[in-house]
Amino acid sequence: MRRVLSVLAGAAVVAGTVLVGPPAQAATPITGRLVDLNDTTHDIAGMTVRLRELGTGSTPGAVVDTDVTASDGTFSLTPSGSGEEFYVRVIAGVYQGGWVGSFSGTAPPANAVVTLGESHTWGAGSHLYRVGAIPAFIQGRVIRPSTGNPVAGVTVSVRRGTDLSFVWDSAVTDAKGRFRVSGITDDGDNVALKFNGSAVGYETGYRDCGGTVVATWGEACASPLGYIGLVRLNHL
Image (cartoon, rainbow, N blue to C red; front, top):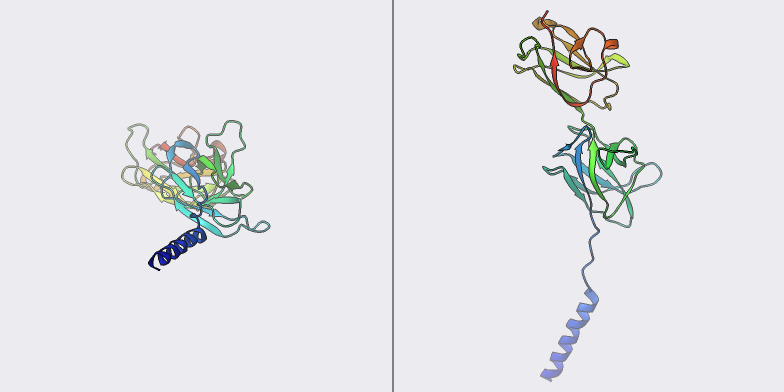
């Protein structure tokens, strides 16, 4: 009798094993690295990236995974549910947010870019390599060209080139001449950067392509986004 019970117990274990089966395999993650579109050697850390289902019509579906870019800009998103294709969205922060779309240029600085439209989808296991994000800031340093010394107290404002009365934001240069203006949602092709140094005895005008200041926007050119280096402002 003891032998029979042992056999029956073994059969129960086998039966249980068959019923449980092997563990399900997790979907292969969608991975990539977020970089500055203007300088793809600069990795962007601390940005939130989300994976979303396709949804219906023009409305994206639910969020299925979220990650925050690591110190080297990398992220990993694991698909779930029954969907085969997904949208990838970067949430706005220090850099502008948007949907990750494919690059349409002939010589892309990055393999994918953050765009405003969610027209491109990604399947499980996609490796996006470098995803270029547009800066949401302009940062630089104001100096006096004759001496190279920093100029403090200059008001720097970022304006829309087609409407100079529209100001995204402004900042005042510190003791080292440094400034940083954030909250920009333009691609940089239509950004007017104005310097008002009148309060500290310096000229007022718009940054031109060479990093000096000219009197009118018509003489200047659109400012790049991100780190722009030195701006030379003359003493009056």
